[in-house]
Length: 130
Image 1 (spheres, rainbow, N blue to C red):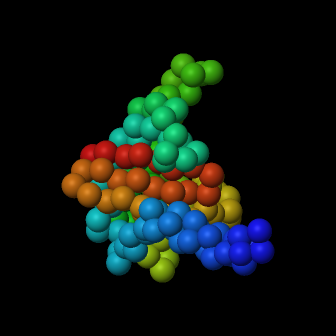
Image 2 (image 1 turned 180 degrees about the horizontal axis):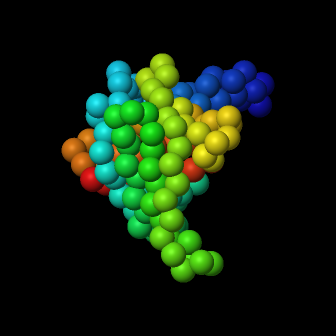
Image 3 (image 1 turned 120 degrees about the vertical axis):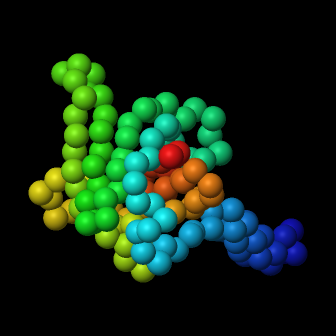
């Protein structure tokens, strides 16, 4: 039992290291890799969960540092556009939460391969494709 208690911190460290290794962050030099239209086809709280919420929203990253988001508002039965500002800071995407709000959230690019991108924002992962 004493041996187990001595090894417990080491096991915890290894478990944490393994979790961090799975979610590598891709640091962006600028916005050139993400510019243009993307379709947000799913969002999820954790990548390993199968119950992704299916979406069909469109995000357009503009060269001027604005992000247009198009989605369907089911309450109004209408398509809406929301435009917020974003910037690349230390390789991460920092974007406004709402238009005309000073509050921002930081999103990490955890996958960027071919025409697929996965963003990890504060509470959700967003799965996008070109």
